[in-house]
Amino acid sequence: MRRLSRNFILPSIMNTVRGIALRSLRLALFHFRKDISAPSSGPRAGTRYGTATSLTPSLQSTRAIRTGLKFLVIIFCFLGAGLSSRMAHSTTSILFSRFTDIAWGKRSRVILDVGCGVASFGGYMFDRDVLTMSFAPKDEHEAQVQFALERGIPAISAVMGTKRLPYPSRVFDVIHCARCRVPWHIEGGKLLLELNRLLRPGGYFVWSATPVYQKLPEDVEIWNAMSSLTKSMCWKMVKKTKDTLNQVGMAIYQKPMDNNCYEKRSEDSPPLCKETDDADAAWNVPLQACIPKLPIGPSVRGSKWPEMWPQRLEKTPFWIDGSRVGVYGKPANEDFEADYAHWKRVVSKSYVNGMGIDWSKVRNVMDMRAVYGGFAAALRDQKVWVMNIVPIDSPDTLPIVYERGLFGMYHDWCESFSTYPRTYDLLHADHLFSKLKKRCKLLGVFAEVDRILRPEGKLIVRDNAETISELEGMAKSLRWEVRMTYAKDKEGLLCVQKTTWRPKEIEASM
Image (cartoon, rainbow, N blue to C red; front, side, top):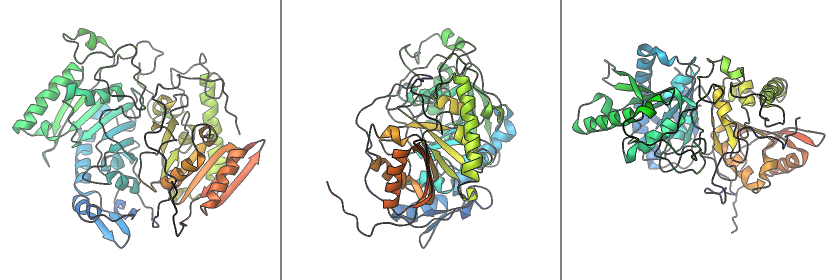
């Protein structure tokens, strides 16, 4: 196993607000029922079942009406997500048939879906070799993100409000918004400017909402405001179309590739961001109503489009060269290549063939400390998706993950993760917990792992032997099954499986 070098820094560690966790970890266990896995989309999408927890009237009735949800004893059955599914299939059929410049699964690989509902759009695109980072708030529709994850579709619970989304700048190839009900045009376009921060130069924003295809006074007013705003942002509308079958329309905008348009504007509104503003700073950073300047120079990230998929997965990003030191201490380009070779070897010889994991039953995977995304890249031939997490106190390698055609987000593991209980099938942590011990208690972090992981889900940890021993003790205290433990030269490997055990009585002390 490799030791981590302290003599690194790729791009500098991100500028974040540090201090007391905003969402404290809870030292508590959650009760559950057994769940059954199944495909996420296609004819058998409705056979993927979820886990019943507290059965609220909203889940049993209101949501059932909107999404075709049926309640069977303690099982939720998702029948294609009803209206959301039909809308998703309609918009994507228009995209595929009428606008080929996006080049799904080739030029455009990583998408952000705003206000995703139950993520039918993301499920539809996943089968076409496109990764969609879907997010939606917990609103009157209740746990729609939980529904998406139960279907095996990537999604997080998030809201566009006062702070930046937890992603670096210029990483999404396409941003999609269909009936997402976000007021893009208000407050100087602050929310749309956040999407502009996230969108690659030359990337597309796909907007499907009533202002695009209806002529009611309110819709016309919003359309005019959006037209003025997008023009001032130098977004070019490259397509406006309407489906003849259900009369749903969409507008497609493209972000500029350089700063020429910004410099020629008659009014500096929205203004360009200050030189001191770090567009990549995204953890607890307030929204900025400004436009970041686009990168200048052939060796700067974002100055040109990534390689076509799947070539971009394996090729070293063009801005990574030997002049910088990588995370593990080698020149950055060599570090990247060595990391990928390492994870291909580990995944092939150990994870896929050596641990007894039935990967046909694994769909939702999280790498809790992703670095370059090598673990996720090595799993490409498996029918899984991997949420790559770059901790906020680690080198900022998340742009590299996106450049490879993968996705992920920033997170502080001393806080709770923005997902519902029991939503991931497998968690992977490489030298994460030993670092966290310096900032927060491992018991709280392990309770969060227990919350996120499904019953019968797997946790794979690579860390120093002392930390492995601590984690093994915690797993045994929860009656988890130890599938593998190994130690050599003060380094260790642990694979444990969560069981359905829960204590009969819960005692809490203040």
